Image (cartoon, rainbow, N blue to C red; front, side, top):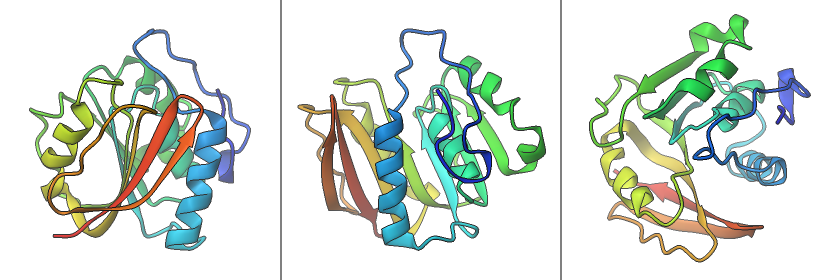
Length: 179
């Protein structure tokens, strides 16, 4: 596992020790950042990203490498992502980690422009998380939701489907949140 672009391109990340963690593939991550550039422009310096169900933290750390101002990672088990966060000592002021279940997490003071979530497949957790994080989002926030390719993911009120793509076993849903 490695960072695929930006300032830390090529930096190796610690692979997850847990079988419960399933990092987004390099190919899908690259495609998602191309989509983000098309939607947001090439300068991410003013954007804050929330990574829900962070796992290894690879997506958030990729966002940091590609220029996001700040990343926040939320997961019930932060063991794997903490190992990767330590690989970025110069970025410690731009990385926040929240160790909590999405149902008990307290809304941060900051609101987010972009959300990425990759919940365990086929457990209905994405819909719950999308509902829970509404107060955490800026108006017009872009939400990227990875689910298993055949998994339904109805969007809660306030979210509008923008695009849907498939990458191997994954389906990527892009939605915009409106307050």
